Image 1 (cartoon, rainbow, N blue to C red):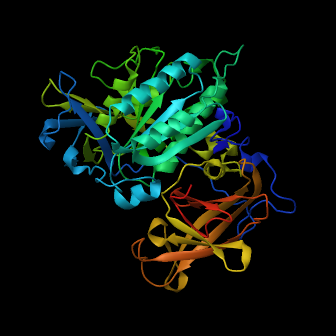
Image 2 (image 1 turned 90 degrees about the horizontal axis):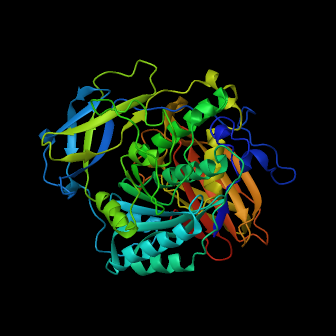
Length: 526
């Protein structure tokens, strides 16, 4: 089943976001605009924040032959941030990253239960700007790669496809090679979209970044490393200096938000261009640092190197590139440090470089991170209802991906067909002290009903303040919080999509509740 995200003006994506469903489409008749208990619109301001107290790097090390090296010690690494040597606080070897056990996995719920820290692979077939013949070659290469694997894949793998209007979930996480092959076989590729008479293709840019943000938010709950294999060309290269100042500022905000979202979700992007075309990589300083990977000409492959992945092009052995990317995602070191110099200046990008003690070894990791906080004064409309909260809720509600950062179950209330009981794990929420030795947590709950064709029939959004008694909440498995919500479920409704967003940290959980089929649903239900 597909979900459709409207064409988004990318420069309003995180500034106004007014073209998304929750801002543009009216709710059901008689339903007021969602407001909180103070009669304010149920939306907060959007600020990019970085916890500068700790930086975590996933690093892949290879020798001069391109072979993975897995027997190094902490002293073999030197890490620099903004050209200043950092003191490593901890290092985890590749052996410390648990692979999925020899047990079948067929959903996100099973992945989080059986192998919560396992490296995973997310494969996306790009049908935005990839020529039809190149799409066919990409599919052939993916089949060729899968046929070299055993019946049980080494890493849980998710398969999706993105075009100008849809991110299609072809198959949730699975270790079954046959399930991925069957999903690929039954997927009808969309003919690539082209826009004539423009200096750059804004719609293609929009679709690419919307998909990246969706994947980052959906996979944030799984703590394992994710190799995101993007098979296709993304958006066409363009020169951002040709844009108007307000457009250029909006563009920078989108790039910074997307780069940091992938970082926070521990996603490394690998771009595999079956057409064999790309720009040259960004110019480095003499000491190997990059001031800002997105400061010049923009190319989709820059997202790969910025996140610690790799951009492959000029090759026709895409099946081997897929194998290489998957291999890297299972053989990485994790380095942790605290920046030696606090972030006190106004520079947005903090450059990172890992230098190996052995000059014959090469380390690959993300090029840095964006540390600035975006002031509301720079974008006056950022505090209106059309903000990041609205964007997160709209994207998650329309998606078929399982968002697992907030674990939840949904049940029908007996004899009340439109009433639902939502049970949350308290450990997934953010609690603050309140009067009377109480703890409160604020969340936003959205619910949408769909018919069998995926058309939205009804929508409800509300802000809830949850409360627990004296003391600190226990672990997510032993303490729960319950709330109730009401949404019409009359025919032709066949599915209700529940979205819970924690306001304090922007974490999201989702459930697809199938009407007339199941009366209990959890994060792994599709």
